[in-house]
Image 1 (cartoon, one colour):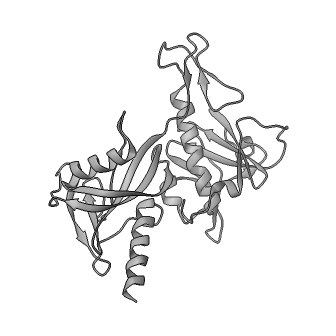
Image 2 (spheres, one colour):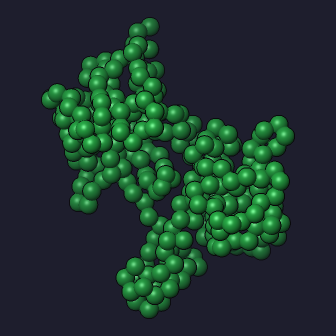
Image 3 (cartoon, helix red, strand yellow):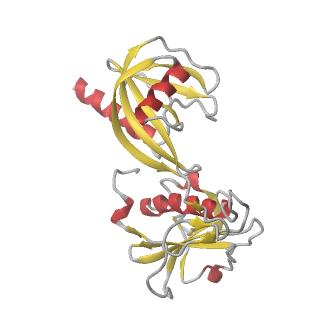
Length: 284
């Protein structure tokens, strides 16, 4: 979470509505990875808040009920690539909307896009190929032919700050489009604990061993469907050697000599900012 507050302060999740809608609702409408937003004359950005998507001349391919936000219904919607839109509306990449949309809207949009993708990608049973059906009281699909269940996919990944004295290990990933440095991260493998994943990823990507692994926090990351689980660990042994595959450069940095950092949207930046605040406090 960006501010440390839970989305459930404002949001009550649900799969089906307990009453007829008939009131204005929040509409999280997606065309591919882009979400429909309304841009006001003062450049304020919001999402549509109407009774139906059809009021916006939007014809949903699929629609999902998400629950209520501030006591108003919420829907996620998938539309086709040839959808036309009204003046004042545009489709914008969700990642670019951080710190543009209200925080509660952005957080729920992250959930909405994952539900849209899951619904889109599981219209057919992965076991027997038959059309699936959406369950009424649970976020799940069921195959009426073979009985196979499918729930929304989450991919757990660890992300870890490694400390050596007063320095932090930061690395540049070859997939970054800029000169940004961040923490070591990677997906959890089957049969692996989170702590084992931390040790393996750091060993594989930068060649060092760590100890005293401590949990920091977590963040849903809808790009595309990760759950980022943050840790802090102490350096144990070894010399930094970038793997040259994912990591192109890595090194130890102190608070007075930091490279370009990740945006504040990410848990990586939250952990790094925690380190910066800690070191600045120690220096006062």
